[in-house]
Every structure is written in C-alpha cells, then in structure tokens.
Length: 118
Length: 110
Image 1 (cartoon, chains in turn green, red):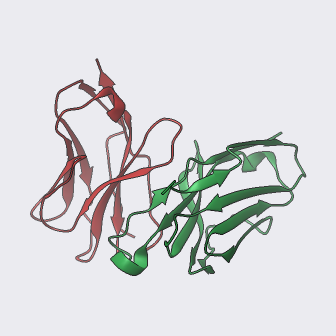
Image 2 (cartoon, each protein chain N blue to C red):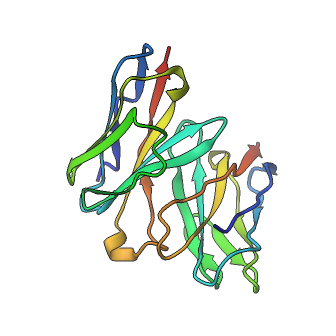
C-alpha cells in the first residue's frame, strides 16, 4: 500500500482565497483524522471521521474550516476564506479501529501539506 | 484528560542506547501508553504501545513502571536516522484525540 496520500504537498495562497487540501487514506481503514501543526500550538486534532461520517469536529478552529469525506477513499479540508494565521502543516491520518479498537489502534500519517497564506 | 511530561530535548551518541522518559502520574487504569516519533519534514509515525507489561518490537522497547506512572522508550542502538521528536501519548478506550504535547527532541551525534 502507498500509505496515506496528501495533496498538494505545498500550497501558497493569498489571504481571502479558498484553499482545499486533499487526502486519500489507506484502503480498508475506517477512521480518518485531520491534524494541524504549528510551532506555537504543536500538533492538534481538527476533526475525525468514522466510516465517512464526521464524529468530532470540536477541534475545527472556526466556521471558515470545513471537512468532508464523500467516500471511503477521499477526504477534503477546506478553508474559506484563508487567513495568514492558517499557515501551518496539515496532516491527514487513517487507522483501522474496527479491527484493533480505539485505545490500541495505530494512526498512519500522510506527509502533510504545508500551507502558507500571505 | 491525563497528561504526560517529557524532557524537551536529549542527546545521544550513535550506536549507543537511548532511554527516553515520560511521566504520566494521572494515568487511568484503561489508558494505553503510545509512542510516536516525527522525523524532520515528515508526519508522525507509530513506534510502540503498551498497557502494563514491557513491550518489544523491531523499532524499540517500552518499559512501563509497576505503578504505571511513568514509562521509558528504549532505542537499543541509536542511529542518525533516529533523530526525531518523540511523543508519549495516553489513549483511552473512547479517546480519539491524541494529545501530542511538545515531545522530546532527540539529537544523535556521530
């Protein structure tokens, strides 16, 4: 398996523009997670899905952020409008909790998308 | 949520063992102890996890104190490729919010 795939790897945009980050989880995994990493706040969970359904979005910073998972092999994280403070590395991760359970599952992370908002 | 405490940084020489400590004095009976690491410019990767007994895998060993209030990740022979930030995380049965904290930045000297 190719692992978790994220695109683009780097995104530079101007304030006010819409940004869409994409993720393809590992085939067969039933959980998908979106994280954000900054120097100030470290790695934070934004939202996660179980079988394509959003379960907990309490980490989404504000209404400008939205995430969807239309099918088991694709998810998007959208920021509209983008602001300079959204600059960060965004990671997608997936896991197979249906097999292992919540406390013992392994999350597999993608390479991340480095977002710069000017 | 139970919290973990790790040193900000540690140094090791190549080919020597490394012991990375983690304190988790408020751990609950159902919390598993997980370790992840993040190499430069990469996403975090799983290292090892355990509940009560010591655990070994091809990457590392995990030594868990008898009272479970602390644990130690052991890299038996550090290589330059082990230079990374190591995170100690507690996971409960219904907790999908992995709190990564600041972790320990391991530097390996040749």
